[in-house]
Image (cartoon, rainbow, N blue to C red; front, side, top):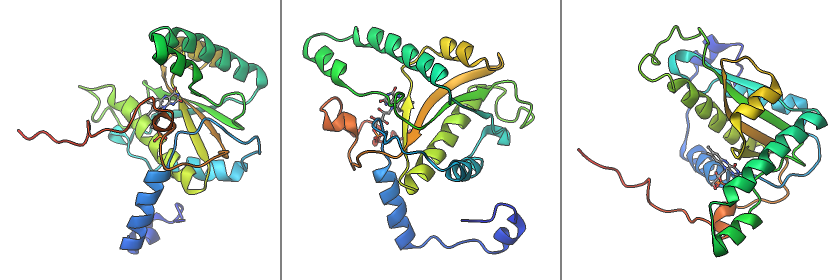
Length: 223
Ligand SMILES: Cc1cc2nc3c(=O)[nH]c(=O)nc-3n(C[C@H](O)[C@H](O)[C@H](O)COP(=O)(O)O)c2cc1C
């Protein structure tokens, strides 16, 4: 782990990422999963702090670091988030018919009732940090910065064997009201974090025959 306090020393000794590291990194990417089934064991606060420190190194437009974490800890607040999910998921399920509807109803799409740590992630759309660089024409670049940070957090967690599950089936206005955050904060994601009960190299939605991986995003247009 690099010493973030000693940036000058770290600059003087840039690391070499060799082939063995690249292989391991590819494994890390391949074995990162969206996790919905968690053990109830607690996660050491020190580990969470370490992940949060590392996540601060993620890219952000203008170096704005607009991500804001809210740790959702109380049973009452988690119950509100879970009710929010259940309401939204029922509506979402109504879009499908027949076998698809039956399969949707069986999908496990969150771990809110069990995950020992849960974070709502917001983007501070009003942050002055970054002095507006890069976001005059695309204010949404701030939101993308939060997503880039989430991926860093997700991979870092996985490198410790810790699971992260992203829940987006939520009413963003409701969760923003429930969590009573500043009006300028835009809801981006709800993350469940904890030790997974199982590990897989293939996504759950592939395993349950909901959606395979395809090459849709692999082909590159040339102009
Ligand atoms: C923006 C975003 C929102 C997502 N929302 C949900 C969700 O609400 N519930 C869920 O179970 N998974 C959610 N996922 C996880 C995806 O289903 C998952 O990443 C995808 O099926 C591939 O599986 P993998 O992450 O294990 O590779 C979300 C992922 C992203 C990037």
